[in-house]
Each structure stands twice: as structure tokens, then as C-alpha cells.
Amino acid sequence: MKRLLLCSLVLIQSILAQKAPTAFEALKSAENHVAKESVGKVIQINGTRDGVTMTPGTWSFVFFDLNARQQGRIVTVRAGKPIEIRDGYFEIEKMRLAAYKADEVIAPSMLKFDSNQALQSVIKSASLEKVKLSTVTFNLSKDNAARLPYWTVRLFADKNGKEADIGYAIVSAETGGVVQSKIDLQKLVDKKKS
Image 1 (cartoon, rainbow, N blue to C red):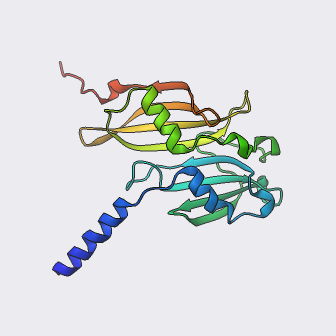
Image 2: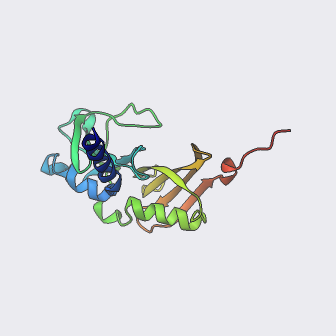
């Protein structure tokens, strides 16, 4: 029994010690599972919340693929390995009715700042060094108006043992600059009861 408990603790500790891949690290793995015509034709990157690590351990990539349904091939990667490959739409906060288009592709030359760098830009610009972040989500896509790639970084922080959504920031994937920030640290302050 002690041996089983010890083995379980070692396994849990090794899982927790693993570094979650950045978006661009996971992208390399995802590109191994699309047609060669789709390599370098990413439309969107999404990193979802992970209960084990602060940054996402699961990344979903939408690739432009003329041969796929709705011209989109979605590859989801966890721990460097694909866990799902499918065709069609992938939208988190908005509904999509039209097929993906070639002008939505983010040129690889525009992808200069990875997810971890975007997070560091947000932490520095919003003075979050002392805030205990619990999880972070990422979305990378082109802005509709400017047609430039931006990270949307949503932040969750610890508030008395529970998670609180403290807001988001938008970061340029080309320059690493924070272009918009809506972070409310007051959500971490306990309200006094009257």
C-alpha cells in the first residue's frame, strides 16, 4: 500500500513539474498532422484553461485547408501530441456562418511573440508581478479591421482559494505591445459586509 501511494505521489509530482508547451511549440506538432499545403496557414490558435498548469496544456489550431469542410482543419494538441483532428468550424465566443477564407491566414512572418511572451507583456504592463495568477487562456487571430494578429490573454487569479476572472488584455503578436487592457484587480478584494 505504501509503495502504491509513493508511486502515485511521484507520478503526480512529475505531471505537475512538466512545463506546458507554448503556443508556437505546440504549433510545430500540429503542423505535422495537416496536409503540406496547410502548413504555415494558421487562422486561429486557442489555449484553454488547464487544471494542472497555469498556462494551457491543450492548444487548438485552425488551419486553412481548401480540401476540408468549411475550409478549416482543426488540430488539438496536448503534451505535444494530437488528441483530435477534424474539419469544420471552431469558434469560442462568436458564432461562425461562413467558411474560412484565405485572407484570414496569419502570415508566419507576423508571428513574432509567442503566448508566454504575450503573458509576460501583460504582467509587466499591468503591474501583475505580485498577483497570484491561477490560469490563463489565449486566443490568437487577426483583428477584423486592421487584419493584424493579436493575442487575447484572459487572466484568472486566486481569491481566497477560488478562481476569479480578473479580465483580459490584447497583445500584438508582431510587436509584443499591449494595445488594450481591461484588468480589474478590485475583483480580488473582499467586499466589506455592511
